[in-house]
Image 1 (spheres, helix red, strand yellow):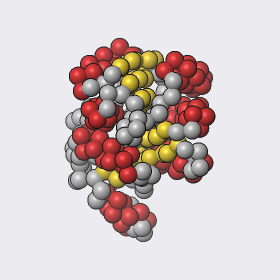
Image 2 (cartoon, one colour):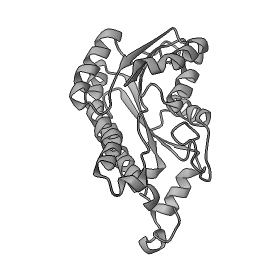
Image 3 (tube, rainbow, N blue to C red):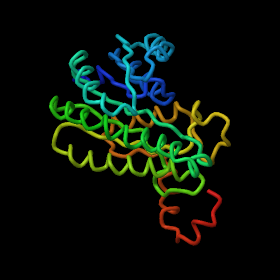
Length: 253
């Protein structure tokens, strides 16, 4: 449970090698020496992130195995993780893949990999996470979503559709937890400079991982349900969402 000053004391990161997650948790532990659990397919890949978090002030950092697409393991993973480490004040859902749009348009396997990781895998692990958060009666559940899901564009419609689906799912989760003591926050970021986007041409209004991390921390402090990064993306997407189909399809997006 959060301390007397409202600071997070325990964090679970699903997607422990995420650049955005690392930046976010670094800011969280700098405020209060929290216990952190990093979950990744190969726990050893979290070693450098764990060292950074310890240097930033984390009281403990642990790495555990978690495979987003091994759906059958998710219930057992959540049970074992909560039983071992106790309650979590913050669960950050930070895993996902961008994929190759050109390949996914013609290769069912490539398309499924994107959808199963970003949507199915997230739903699969969220169900037992929500059960445990509801039982403990407190905590923040944060989803790293994307503006790509606000109106799916032809340039990345497989990725965008997976984000649209999980964004909508989390809106429903938030509604279902409204009186439970558990809060849900959806982070809709634009183009972020990370290892996932390395080599891609930066889009307008692109941001750094630190900018996203600052927005997440502010959003948690203010009890926000949806956070846009940068804030101007909210208004950009309002315009794009309401463009007529004929106009939207002519845009090079």
